[in-house]
Picture 1 (cartoon, rainbow, N blue to C red):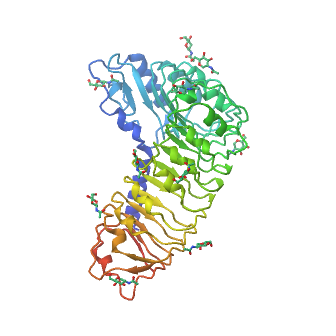
Picture 2: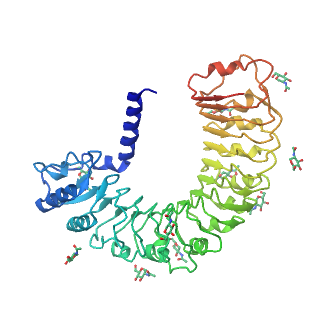
Picture 3: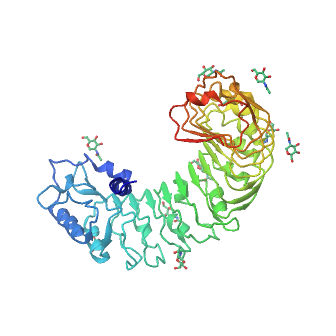
Length: 440
Ligand SMILES: *[C@@H]1O[C@H](CO)[C@@H](O)[C@H](O)[C@H]1NC(C)=O
Ligand SMILES: *[C@@H]1O[C@H](CO)[C@@H](O)[C@H](O)[C@H]1NC(C)=O
Ligand SMILES: *[C@@H]1O[C@H](CO)[C@@H](O)[C@H](O)[C@H]1NC(C)=O
Ligand SMILES: *[C@@H]1O[C@H](CO)[C@@H](O)[C@H](O)[C@H]1NC(C)=O
Ligand SMILES: *[C@@H]1O[C@H](CO)[C@@H](O)[C@H](O)[C@H]1NC(C)=O
Ligand SMILES: *[C@@H]1O[C@H](CO)[C@@H](O)[C@H](O)[C@H]1NC(C)=O
Ligand SMILES: *[C@@H]1O[C@H](CO)[C@@H](O)[C@H](O)[C@H]1NC(C)=O
Ligand SMILES: *[C@@H]1O[C@H](CO)[C@@H](O)[C@H](O)[C@H]1NC(C)=O
Ligand SMILES: *[C@@H]1O[C@H](CO)[C@@H](O)[C@H](O)[C@H]1NC(C)=O
Ligand SMILES: *[C@@H]1O[C@H](CO)[C@@H](O)[C@H](O)[C@H]1NC(C)=O
């Protein structure tokens, strides 16, 4: 790669880092008739003075313009007050001034300070307590100095969305009790926070309003009270992410007590034993993602899942477990299935021809299994949406007619160490779009 194209690539990466999706929200929000309030414009200009704008993110912030037209700023239609401010991925604040001027934007509803590089000298608790209209707060990716408590948080009583991912909260032993005091919280993101385990359950309040709960990569264990809290709080969580923790033992049947659950991610824990047949009771299930655990047994639970999730299930991921046996015929009951990932298990049976009916399937990962039997065009007859195919390192015998024209165009074809037949598989020549091919 030449120097220029490398530079171009770096620019692209930097640009994409800076373009958090939220920025788009502000474009076109401004109402030029109302214009912005002078004291708020001054506060914003002081914030700008106070930070090193390496990437010229705030170049539109100039003193002779209506601040409602500036990038990363949004104003209310009705009042003209600044209600949105996004300083994510900017650099080097002086914490004292930031605190002062943000406090003067008392109408803020949306504050984005993700990866804002506060530097280690910013003291916690961070005084945002006066922003009682705040509904959206992103403080993720900041290296705050010793956040020892979050007692300021309940003062933000309107908060609906909170992201403090990648902030070290290892000293905040009552984090669950604190967030539980936010009555309108619907979306909580605490990824990679070194969260301490919780050993007592708070009285239930906000947990019932949570839709999205992300607690991945926190070393949470089964001996803590986290799961007990979830199962007993009558929560209506829809999207639950507990990946990359240290939960052990069998996957509790009690997940079925969360009737609302649509997306369950338990990947990369230490769960063992069979997948609960009781999951058949989860009628809203769209994603069941249990990869990289120590799960064993066969795929029998699928029969139970067909009883209720037969129209909803879109993603089934069990990669990196120890599951044995064959793929069941029942899979075809999941009319919406878009991803079937069973990569690296001990599946030693056959693949049913009925698999070819899954007309919404885009991702099919069956590689690294001692699967056997013959695989023919019938297995793919209706897989018109298929984009990613992995059949590597199986014992499957391929038997395709030489003039087969597949119904799909693949992006990725992985068939390493497969018995592709005595002649070169001619159907590969029909594939025009792939980015990745591995057949050796
Ligand atoms: C602002 O006004 C536009 C059109 O006038 C409207 O679609 C939008 O919902 C309003 N936004 C708010 C927050 O009131
Ligand atoms: C918070 O609001 C109160 C009353 O509106 C005001 O007296 C106080 O100075 C504010 N605090 C900050 C940090 O702005
Ligand atoms: C988080 O903070 C604790 C205590 O301050 C410290 O021991 C630990 O190393 C920190 N973790 C990371 C990943 O920085
Ligand atoms: C739960 O919310 C109610 C009002 O919404 C409040 O009075 C009560 O103190 C809260 N309980 C806890 C444990 O935070
Ligand atoms: C659980 O939540 C539902 C719906 O939000 C409500 O009708 C029911 O009374 C709650 N049950 C308990 C025990 O709080
Ligand atoms: C699972 O399905 C089998 C066969 O339909 C049924 O006998 C069994 O009771 C189901 N188990 C649960 C926990 O629903
Ligand atoms: C699929 O789900 C419907 C309810 O949505 C149910 O009536 C039907 O029996 C299910 N089909 C199978 C094959 O389990
Ligand atoms: C799959 O492996 C299990 C355990 O090794 C064995 O009992 C079973 O017979 C095998 N099934 C097939 C179809 O080879
Ligand atoms: C293939 O899918 C189409 C629609 O997606 C459906 O109408 C047709 O019956 C399917 N054919 C087979 C053999 O499953
Ligand atoms: C391969 O397919 C042909 C025609 O579909 C069939 O006659 C033959 O028996 C198949 N071979 C194997 C090993 O299944």
